[in-house]
Structure formats: structure tokens, C-alpha cells
Amino acid sequence: MTMMGAGMDGRTVRRRSTALAVAALAAALVLTGCSAGDSGAKDTAGSAAEAPAAANGGEAGRDAAKGGTQEAAGAGAPDLRVDQRAIIYTGTMRVQVDDVDAAAREVVAAATRAGGFVGGDQRRSADEDAVAELELRVPAPKFSGVVEEISELGRQQSREINTQDVTEETVDLDARITSQRARVDSARRLLSRASSITDLVTLENELGRREADLASLEAKKRRLADLTALSTITVSLAGPAAKKATDDKDETGFLVGLRGGWKAFVASLTVMLTVLGALLPWLVAFGVPVAVLLLVLRRRKRTAAPTAPVSAPPPVPAARSAP
Image 1 (cartoon, rainbow, N blue to C red):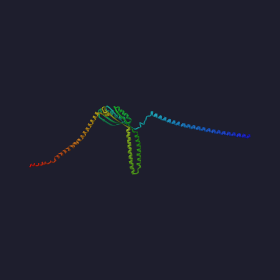
Image 2: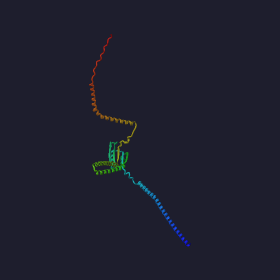
Image 3: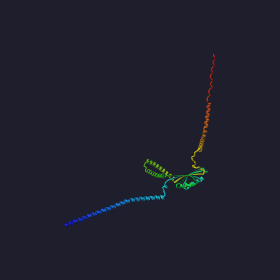
Image 4: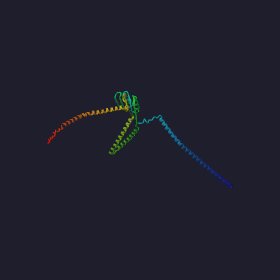
């Protein structure tokens, strides 16, 4: 009995030791898995938390860089977009001077110094009411300088500056010219491979039409290039006694109407006398012979008219005597 109890106690102890070892191993495995899961979750959460931060940091960096670029551009970098546009400048000005001829020579010299030329020159009278109108073509960069130089020749009475932006039209012309040149080259290649007279004639006509369209587009481009490269300034130089263009104002009143009516009457009478003077030679050449002819015909008619015979008076009945 004692030996059997001892054996049973040994088995029980070994079973308990094995169970404890298994439980300890299971606990260790559970603790290891939990710690691994916690560390993975922490790593995932940390990565997820760091990603928005990094994105926000990148966007903030880009915004900061963009803001810095804009500030730098606004602070010191010049805006060159205006210089790259095609703009046509035109100006009209009127200056009163003491000597119109001398001032006209100064205007021509100013245009020549700027690298331009005189496109037109009209002058009226040579007294104090003299007026000279000059059309100048000067390079666009020198436009403002020439205008200011001319305004200092005398007393400036009026000035009008106009601009026309033709950048879009210029870009459109460039694109159309490039496309049309490609069409011309294509027609030439097809013409070189023509195998029949009909195809040859058809392709020659098409090539001629395309070349004409290309020449028209190139002419428009040259015209725009000339207008943008050389600005136009119309200068009116007036003498001390020259009448201003602004003096012709609308006036009302009896005297104004009377003066206008008298001018209209004189103008109408002048027109009538002019017409009469133009018709007088024709009236003399044809009217006098016609009048003489009518007079002769009237006299002949009177001479050829027959005279009526004189009839005898009717007989008077005899008076009867009374019975």
C-alpha cells in the first residue's frame, strides 16, 4: 500500500508539473502574441499618424515656397508680359507755336533722331494763321519720348493717345501661317507624285489656291508687324492766329440764325449764278436761232392767212301802200 501510494504521488506530481509547464508555455505564447500585436498596432498607428503630418508638412512647404516665389516676384522681379504683347500705339496732338515752319523742322528732326520718318506733310498759309499737319512714324519704344519732345515746342492745345492690343490676332496669324505652310508642302508632295493629267491640273489649282492664301496671311502679318514696330503720331502745328478746332461750338439765338440764313442765301445765290453762267453759252447758241425761227414762222402764218369776201347787204322789202 505504501509503495502504491508513493507511486501515485509521483505520478500526480509529474502531471501537475507537466500541466504547470504547459500553462506557463501557453501564457508565454499569449503574452508574446499580445506584445507583438500591440507593437504592430503602435507601428501602424504611428505610421498613419505620421502620414498626414508629412502630407501637411509637404503642402505647407509647397505653400510656403509658392508664397515666397510670389513675394519675390512682386517685390523685385519685373513683369515682362506687357513687353511681350503686340500693341499698336497711335497719337494725335495739336501745338500752338510762334513759327510754324521752324517748329515743323524741329518735329522732323525729332522723328529722325528717334529712328523714324515723316509719312505725310501738309501745310496751309505762311502767315500767323498758318497750320502744318505732319504724320510721323517712330519706333514704339521711342513713342512717349517723341510725344513729350514735340509738346515742348510750344503751347500744347490737345493730346490724344490710343492703344490697340493685337497679341491674340498675331498669335492666331502665326498659327494659321504655320498650318497653311504645311498644307502647301503637302500639296507640293502630292503634285510631285501625280500620275495623270487630270490629277496634275487639279493639284496645280489646289496648290495655287493654297499659296495665295498663304501669301495673304503673310501680308497681314507684315502689316501688323509694321504697325506694332512703328507707332503713328499725327502732329498739328498752329500759328498764333490760327483758329482752334474747339472754337466751332454750337450757338443759338436770333443773330446766329440770321447769320446762318444769310450765309445760306449767299451760298444758294452763288450756286444759282454759277449754274446760270454755265447755261448762258448754251442759251445764246441755241436760244437765239430758235427765237428767230419762231418769229419768221409767225410772220409767214400771218401773211398766208386768206381775206374773207365782203357780202352785200340783204335787200330791204318795199313798203306797201294803204288801200
